[in-house]
Length: 184
Image (cartoon, rainbow, N blue to C red; front, top):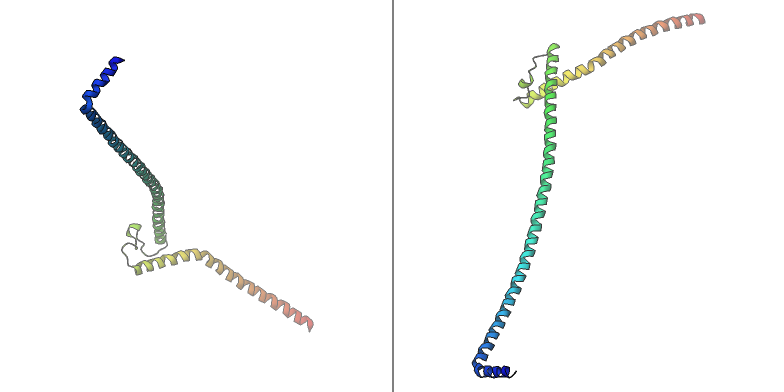
């Protein structure tokens, strides 16, 4: 213990400058620690801010990508519908071409005027007046073919009415003549 006291005394004798240096060193170290803590706090807050910005950016990109995926799905469905509609319309056009050709052949058999094939359709490159006249012609031909059985039935009805009228006239002449002769 005595030795320790001697060391402390020796230290005290030697240390006015050393003590000052040590206190200065401690003060500098404390400042450095405060500075480093402040830098650490600033870096930590910057890191937290960057993480929150990164999270919000990632969320917005995720939302944007999901929106794009939904739009892509809608467009794909629309494209499928358009493809199906295109197929239906092409089939319908082919059906109309076949009908047009058949009607043209039918009209040729009936002795109608020249009927061009579908590739030589009067509708291709024709003026609107020509198309209207051609449409009117075909409409009238169609109407005649529709009305023809009705007209035949009407003619039969007229003949029957005429025959029944003559029969009624004969019946009336016979009955009224005989009734009037009986009364007199």
